[in-house]
Length: 210
Picture 1 (cartoon, rainbow, N blue to C red):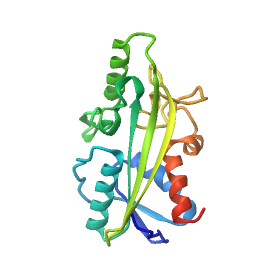
Picture 2 (picture 1 turned 135 degrees about the horizontal axis):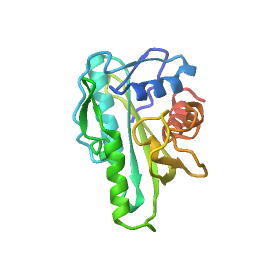
Picture 3 (picture 1 turned 180 degrees about the horizontal axis):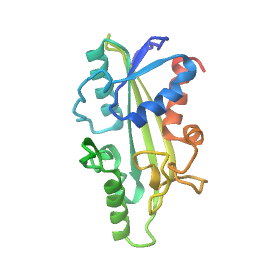
Picture 4 (picture 1 turned 90 degrees about the vertical axis):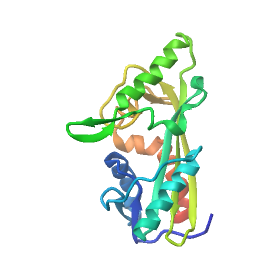
């Protein structure tokens, strides 16, 4: 990994997920970074063939940087459930099968959350429900250099889903020491304690000296 650093140039966020763009953009706003999404540029989504969060984040960041000619940041994150051998892990999004909602493509996150709950229920009522969100942020530059930052948020899996302010598996994740799910928390509070915030703190320290 290189020692290249971000400046005030435009940064491509390698996602087609509006919720993820909004969250990442909010975290980078204090540093004067102008964020645009790969989706708004019409960039294709590369196949995520990696076996780890790091590999997949780098695949996405490098593809966006090469296609756009701009530095790109990719997030690869997922839910890891201890009792399920850390699944769904890198296959977190795949468990949410692609569907069409009101004429637009998307993923069925309620289906995915139900799959996890079903597997936990099969193991019995005393099953360990500890889990964590993992996040890897990868930055890639058009010259081929890159940097990686990793974060984690521990918690427990709850059912039924609660809250409307998050996305993905947020409605079933209760952070350690808390009682509300990520989807029930005020966005500012979630940003403060999330796996993505942990990874961003490391990115900011390295990229902006903060």
